[in-house]
Image (cartoon, rainbow, N blue to C red):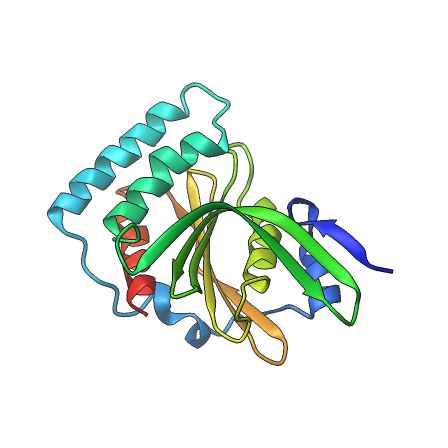
Length: 206
């Protein structure tokens, strides 16, 4: 009997049991968020300072929903990282279906933002309401990465609730494995958006 699960209700335990997903702590598996990151220009810093100010203004009047987070936080980052330019394509609300033949499991859902290059899923972005934690979106994001068309190639993901950001890398080999970056937060001193943009540029060029 085929079991259909909603990606929004999926858990890490579901992905481990049904798809044999494995977490890797080895830093060498995910160097893209740490090593040889591109510079951020003074003009990019100026824009990101305004983005941070806009977010802090946004959250003074909760609730803050997913669409405002995408507009205020995600869209400027994608613009500065040149993901709106050729050869990249940005898709929104794209339906995804993940099938595990052995277990008879189908996971369905619609991801928030997908960045494509020659049908390679470079970046999947799952944005959550500001009141929700990043962890609440991790299993959902991983299920979308598992569902990309060429499962043998790597995929990157980014989860944000506006305040916090977490990068994810997944590689489907004999079994799918993934790793995460550290948390980045708009509330940290300085402006973590600089570092987030540097990582996006690195992923763009990887």
